[in-house]
Length: 171
Image (cartoon, rainbow, N blue to C red; front, side):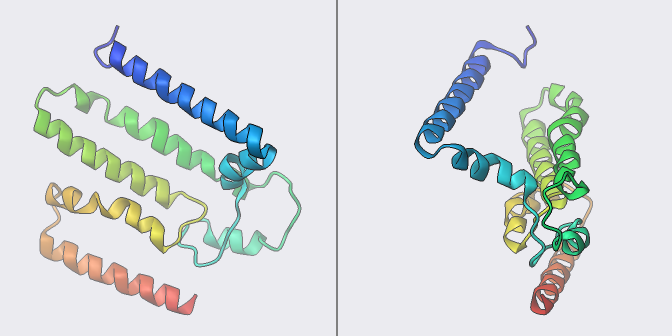
């Protein structure tokens, strides 16, 4: 067995899976298919173009008038997002976690969480202002260990807030 797989981790994974399935089934019994749709399916097929910072914003805007429920490219937009955040990024950092120093692992974990969250938000079909809060908690730690100076980081942060304000003002 790999050192990454041990009894405690298997127990945690199994109990999390059982809890997820049991609670989902319980809510399905109470609310029926509506619960499944609103909890899981809606977020895959949602097409919202209002106040949107998404890379898919223009595509969603021009196709939002079409109400036909056919399989379109916008409904498959979650595939790159899922692939990057769940497969590619963790595989890139797999070797780094074989390091022995604990403080290096903690810094690396914070960087990975920042990169995964940032990637998830970047490739999300719907991205409004509050989505940026998800990765902002990791940003100071990321900047402190990067080659970006604090002065440059502050200037970039101010420019980002101003540009977001201008975008929302016109939206």
